[in-house]
Image (cartoon, rainbow, N blue to C red; front, top):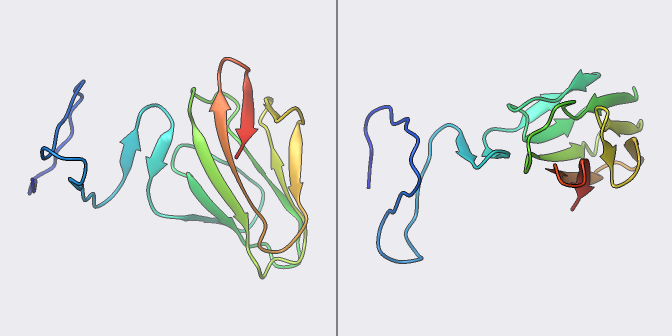
Length: 130
């Protein structure tokens, strides 16, 4: 199915095709549920608080350490993938925004190229690392 106009709607079930191999091509941003978004990659070069536009984040601070903070009021299932660029020689701290990240208030990516994926679980009221 190809849609050649702005398509924005809320529905409970959408079926495209009749088999598991059916594909959906999206230009722009695709939101799935309350937290998973597929969009372009955000680049952060200094301290920042992430929001729902920042699902995939590359941090490029050169020789300067900085902190990116997860949202303070996340929704269940909210997801972020954060990477410390291979060219960043200083530590990158990821703050939980008032919620723990696997039991800690923050996590430090202390090696170049390190990455982390987190998803918020409202039942345990914390970010879980994957």
